[in-house]
Every structure is written in C-alpha cells, then in structure tokens.
Amino acid sequence: MGIVEDLERARAAFDRRDWATAYDRLSSATDLGAGDLLTLATAAYLVGDDDACVRSLQRGYRREVDDGNILGAVRAAFWLALVLNTRGEVAIGSGWAARAERLLVDQGDVVERGYLLVHDFYRRLEQGDLGGALRVGGEITDVARRFGDADLLAQGLVCQGRMLMYSGRVPEGLALLDEAMVGVAAGELSPIFAGNTYCAMIEGCQEVQDYSRAAAWTAALTRWCDTQPDLVPFTGQCAVHRGQILRLHGAYGDAVQEFDDACRRYAASGSQAAAGLALSERGDVHRIRGDLAVAESSYDEAAGFGYDAQPGRALLLLARGRTSAAVATVRRLLAETMGPVFRSRLLAPAVEVLVAGGAVDEAESAARELAGIAAGFGCAGLRAAAAYSLALVALERGDPDQALPQAREALRLWSTLQAPYEIARTKVLIGRSFRILDDEESALTELTSAHRSFDELGTVPARQEVERLLHRDSVGGLTAREIEVLRLVAAGRSNAEIAQQLVLSDKTVARHLTNIFTKLDVPSRTAAAAYARDHDLL
Image (cartoon, rainbow, N blue to C red; front, top):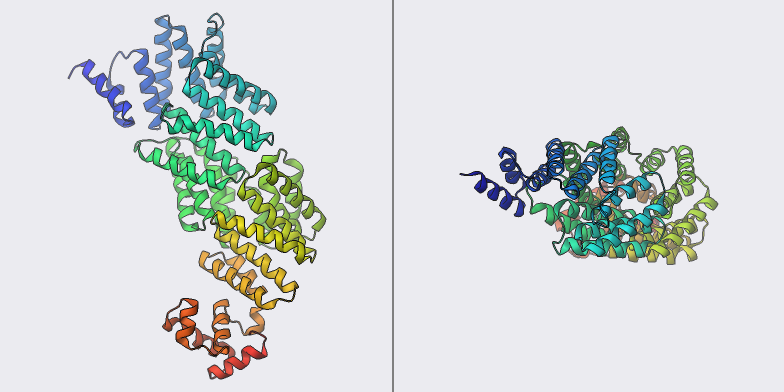
C-alpha cells in the first residue's frame, strides 16, 4: 500500500473518531505535512499519549516555520501551550504562548489572536483577576463571532459564563453555557474543544447545584464518550459526574464504583492530580453511610493530590462527636471562602455543624445568606438546601410554625430531584416539628418513613438518629418496621392484612411477630397489643 493510501486511511479513521487507528497509522508514516502532524497530535492526545502529542506539535511548529506559514506556527504554539499547561508544565507552556504572541505582532486582525486570548484568560483567572478574566472572555467571543469560528466561540462563551457565575450572575452565566453547548450538540466543534465544553458545563452546574442540567449533560457526555472507545481524556471527568448524579439518587455503591473508575482513568491519562475531587466525593459517600475510617482515608488521599476535602472533613468531625473541632473548622472556612458560588457549597453544611454546636445565631445568619444566594441563582438543589437549613434553625429555636413551611418546600424540591437521602432527612425535620406540636401520630409516620429510607439506603448514622427519635429504647428495642407491625396487630389486623398494607410477604410478617414477642417477652398477639396500648404506640 502506498504512502498516499496510508495517509488517506489514517485521515478517514480520524474522521470517524477511531483515534487509535489514526494514531497508529500516522505514527508509522514518514515526512508528514503540517496538517497531518496536527492530526497526529490530536489523535495522540485523545488516546492519552501526551508526550507523543507534544512531539508532534513541535514537529508541526517547525514545519510551519520552515514553510513560512506564520499563522500555522501560531496555531501549533497555541496547542503546545495548552497541552503543557494542562499537564502542569506551566513555565514551558507560558514560553510557547509568549512565542506565539511574538509571531503575531505583524499579522493584523486574525482569528489566531482570539486563540491566544484563551491563555490570557487563564493567566488572569490564576491571578484572581475575575473582572479582567470576564472582559477577556468577552473579547474571545467577539473575535470568534467575527471570524465564524465555532471552537473559539464555545471557548469564549464558557469563559464568560463561568466568570459571570463566579460574580453571582448565575442565570446569565448558565445561559451562556447553554449557548456554548449548542455547538457541541450540533457537532460543530472539534473533539478537544467539545470535551472541554462538556466538562466545563457540567462542572459549572454541579458548583451551583443545578442537578437537572448536570444530569442531562452528564448523560450526553457519557453518550459522546461511548462513541469513542479509545478516548482517554474527559472520561475521568465523565465518571466523576456520573458518580455525583448517582450519589444524589442514593445509588451509593454505583457512585463509589464511578469515583474509583475516575481515579483509574486519571492515572491512565497521566492527570492524577485531578483525582482529588473523585476521592473527596468517594469520602463523602462513605461518611454518609457511616464508614468513617474509610471516609477519612479517602479525604487523606485527596489531600495527597492537593485537594482540600471540605466541608466533608468538618462533617466527619461532627459524625465522630468532635463538635467543637467541627465548629472551629467551619468558622475558619466561612472566613476564608469568598464569592457566592464557593460559599453556596459551604453554607448548608456549616448550618448543620453550627446548630450541633449550639451556635444558633451564627447558623441562622448562614442559613439566611444561603437563602439569598439560592433566590438569586434559582437552582432547585440550592433552594432545597436553603429551605432545609432555615427549617433546621427554626426547629433549634423551638419554632415549628416557621420550620414546617420551609421543610415542606425542601421536601417538594428534593422530590423533584429524586434525592432519597435528602427527602428522608427533610421528613425527619417534619416529624420533629409535628412532635413539638403534640401531633405524635403524624410525627411517627414521618420518622418511620425516614427510617425506612435510611435503612434501604444503608446510611447508618442517619438511621440511628431516627431510631433515637422513635424512642426505640422505650419500646423494647423494636425496629421501626416492627413498631409498624405492632401497631397494626393492636388495631386488630390479621397477618394477611398487615402484609398487604405494608407490602410484605406473609412469611416476613410472621418473622416480625416472632421478633416482637421475643423482644417484648410477651406470649401472644393480645399481650403484644396490650403492650402497644400501655406504651402509647397506637
């Protein structure tokens, strides 16, 4: 087969997203032109061989210079800077960006200036100049529109959108991210820009707890990755985002598997530093389930990659009974954390810790701040967290009339997001409110429902807390389900009727009755019913 035919096959493989074949064929070819070297560099990047990508870009840069194609050389230098910066070689990457700037001095108004503004944007972001970064994002977008460049337009919209979000203008920022995603959905973007846009969009949604958007685009990103079996970059981020959505829906085992998979993918791509978020998320799942030692280990691993697993660590201190240390930690975090987006992720856990530590005034201030942010952002998850926090504070002040409306609003919002753990936690607040209002029957209904959910989810600390609220010790150590069965026995229901009402098998009901008789040390249904009446369980 001739050289021309080999190149045509390599280009065809690239066009159909068969990155491994394109990479193999182009790697074995000789005397590639500048365009094919850029294709080889892209294929190498997409199969996770960053070193080969950099070598190909360097060869492409030299070929463009030798051919007198200054703008082509600028493009190669832009990509070299981007790849090197992404893998942490910032000094070398900055050198390539500076070289590209020098080459453009006499080139007039060309689209390549917009691409180099991308590096200016990230420099300003790194320096904390959010206003300057927002302005540069707008300039990138303007250049892209003027030249009709889809890749650059998506990048500019992402830059603008994220900066608007960080300045508190979340609806405007999300609208620009939505616009950027139009180009991705229409297939207008090259693969690297498409992957970057997907990940930026989902990360932005997660930061403001816009779970509906995050779930929709995570599903789209998963489909996009699945069409490219050899793809290495972006798949780690995709696994993290899938894990986050699974955690929201209470699928904790599957979520942990996704976080572990993300760590493996980051290692394969040479981007292990990015594993910190996955490890922190994994730690959060283990903490919620009561595996506190495993959670701490995950947080420690995250720290090894430079990721501060907060507020997870503060909540872990609280779970271990180290309330004073947890309060000190959240006070420090609140003092250090600036910007509405970053504070929005901290405030709800801070309220929980501060309430536990008796700092109710501080907790109320944090809850009201969160409510204000949530109203401005408009995202359902954040509004639910704010309503829950306000209800928690009101309950701590012994004010069920204030707590109930907020708790019911939180329950409504969490229900729309299909978040079973959060739904159950909110039912606990409703049950506590009913109890203060002396509506014990309604309180037990809500608490028992929450207990059932925590039991099914395997969230041991939350389940144990509800068991205390259900006065488990005062009713002979019965489980929530056994209490339900006992109430129905006392109401004169048969085993078959109990099974039908509780959606259980007859055999399961019989087993519950045996356990009830043993725990209460009673010989019959009649005696068990009398026990229920004596202990106000009816």
